[in-house]
Image 1 (cartoon, rainbow, N blue to C red):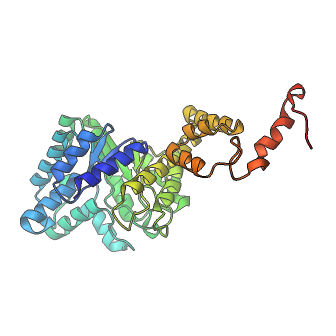
Image 2 (cartoon, helix red, strand yellow):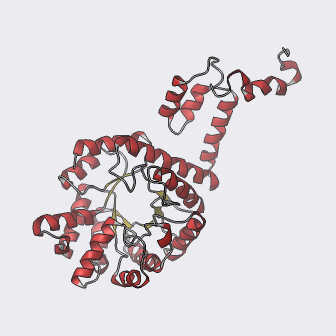
Image 3 (cartoon, helix red, strand yellow):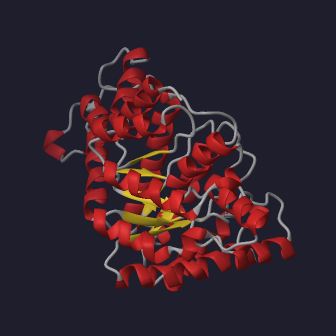
Length: 363
């Protein structure tokens, strides 16, 4: 609800090198917060309009089940008019998918906030997901404002035990059909992917989405490869993100250290973006991107030359690299304080030079 705090987090994400941001606010003046973020962001901005639709219904009528399909579409149009670049819409969380979830059971049920809002609405009214029913109207709005639809995974697994279950894949099958309809309507579309997935299954999930959704860009929420990394979930997500990216995922959603625990601070936002960027870069190397490979090669050359200024400049987080170097520098300017005068590179360097360039040995 604190606009100044949200703008500080936007600045932290930008400073960390994010490629896009999302406003997921559920408190305060939602219109003002969204518009301020759009105004201050030089990178694409995404939102989840169902949050605002549910909150406005609760504020006016005391319950989110008071949402009306027209009100949901009106909120979506408001976001698009404000200039957002992409919106998450949980169109695949249908009554059929909910029935599969109820029959099979789950450990963590539904962990998607947008998915839970729609599930509660559907179960209360005994009606179909209004975003699914009114998908043609949704496409018309997206086309009018040139907004990309991010087909949300409202039934994504919230723990390893639920990964790859029937409810998740029922939703994915529906999203595959809607990808085709969006493309036929001339609307850009991407698909959001699972949150918690065992490491050995990450590649399978990526390949399944690519087949079912006709190669649509895949936006993965992590994935987190363990459930026990509270306080370090940015690392669990980066591990899964690197594997997913290597397997063909296109867009990695960052996770902060405070995931599952608390609203992130600007510092945690920064740390989470850096972790996701490391995952993405590792995946780029695995996928053979020349620019990614050359970046690492330049760093290796700087390390061989013991050029610490160059190493810092090439780091994915130069500020942290510089701070560590300045706080704990070696007494010898051309080595680090880990090895000091016993620096392996320095010891071997003169022995591997051409014969005429070797310095005289001193022992």
